[in-house]
Image (cartoon, rainbow, N blue to C red):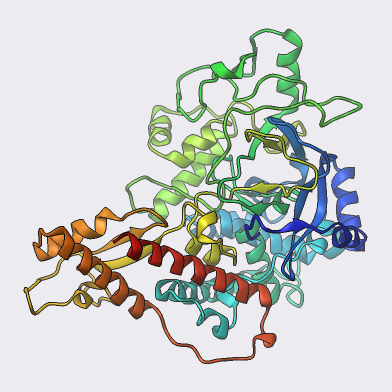
Length: 533
């Protein structure tokens, strides 16, 4: 999952990986069930200075606006598939746990994956589960590794997450005891499997901009690149084909398809009472019987922020009542039930429900014509052998390391930043006060509001000067710059800690490499800001 432009395709190792029986069975299963991926090489192994990374590569040149992967809906593991499954009643009978939190998609998918894993070879997704190792969530890494992270806030966040995971495991264990042995074999569905499935959902799930959170086989093989132009969309083959045959604007369901996508009106602009909306695709035949991927499938703009997002209510606390209401409304939107004026008002004020609404007139969970499609929407072709990336969203390194277990070099992640937490209110006495007193360190006063100042690579931070001018009443810019340098250095010292030496051979190298990359990027940003001051 780690982003790096320096990894190069290793043909020999890639060939060796493709001969692994697990991947052979996985690919056979995917192709037999309708995946189209002749433009794509997977598994592909990339190498750099003794490090190896699995991902996907272009098998042949992929043109601009050309699709290179189609994954049919039957392979997708979705929230609605879980809710409509054999264990759907468990979610209803325990709605207080599964539906009254902003983490409801995660919790629902987690239990469903545990259930499907528990089936062993009887699970439809067994070839997928058997081939993929989702790794271990960073919160479960050894303390010796976590203590290497030069960021106190991130270390604390990982510790908090670990405690939350252990609390959830206690609840899951009790639930599975209630529903065993009919649905869960407790000898198989243990904490080890819980942690594995949690890593599956956390690191391999698509969410924002889709009708529900989705775990997608094959589609989850792309490594992260912060500014990858490649995009992903859900499409419906039948609607595209019907519209194509007319060679003119044709109304299919409630959508009007324009032959020129440049006239596209964004479906993200919610219009609840409109009867039609233009498609975001140029109308072309999705399939060609001889060369299914040869025909480009252009999209006007890349998708962004697709992973692990939830936005129950803008500017509002997500109470259990709101979460339950929004989940019920999400399902109502997608089942063609008439929406009331009150429903439309709620949708209009909720970004997540607006995204779901965009699928209302055509998306159905079990429609075999639905596909998840990946397209090269960059400015140039992707050459054979190049790695196929996908952006996990505009993420800081802290987010990436916390959730996925990797980090990017500072120069490769324009969305990374270093956060300095300072006191929102402070009394400053000239000649007596020090900048160290401005640093917010585990403040016990819950009523005191702190302030976050973000430093970015190569960008002068005016906020830190404004903050210091406000607190100290100093107006001399030269003095403010000196105070800013001192503040950054003091804060850096507070957030760093000396760690004891240990035998690195005892620990996974990918974990240590991720932490080192994180620390290096963080150091680059801090030094960049000091040089600008």
